[in-house]
Amino acid sequence: MRRSALALVVLAAACSGGEADTTTSVPVATTTTSTVPTTTSSSTTSSTSTSTSSTTTSSVPVPDNFVTYEHPMFTLAHPDAWSENPEYPGAGVGFIEDHSALALPPTTFSIFIEEQEPGFDVDEHMQRIQDELAGFVPDFRVLRSGERTVDGERTVWFEYADDFTGFGVVVREEAGLHDDILYTFTLNSPEEFFEFDAGTVDQIMEGFQFA
Image (tube, rainbow, N blue to C red; front, side):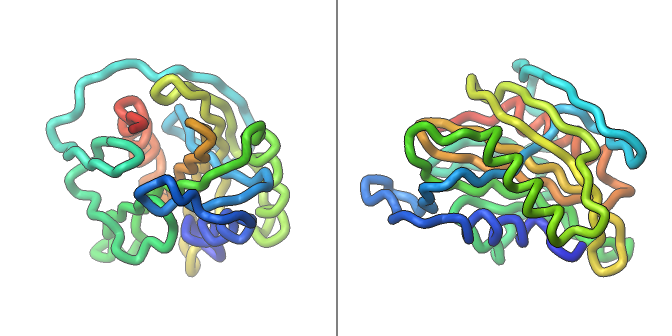
């Protein structure tokens, strides 16, 4: 795709304008403007219509093939086939699953952390992200959107289709606030795998815990 999940990290970082929080022991990007992305509660996508839904996470057992990842700001469990992406450029973490044997782009999932001013509006931020995407993603449109609860916090999400070096991909952006920290969750998946990968991210988000 012309702008992958990494491009959206750069996009979010470009909107940052303040100083890093010096009381936090881990790097947290800072901004004083409304700017955000999203993630889904549903595991399928449509290329012909736009729909909206809401879900609330529930407690489910961690699958046997998941491993725990602990960050100073959160804890999650992810598939053991997903390795930490050493090239992730943002404050947070990125994971990647290689599909080069199938001649397909990789599946990537990232969590970008950004400090916000009190009163930051996630819904306005998501709308701004969509407006900006419309400026550089050809034929951009939201395929699906909605909201859910992640570890007691409301998150909002949307999905859209894009192109990555000639391959079709689907991107799910999700964002929510916790203690004035904006958490942006980005899934970027080959369209052939998106339904499966989206379901995997749903499982990750069900067990996600803020520190």
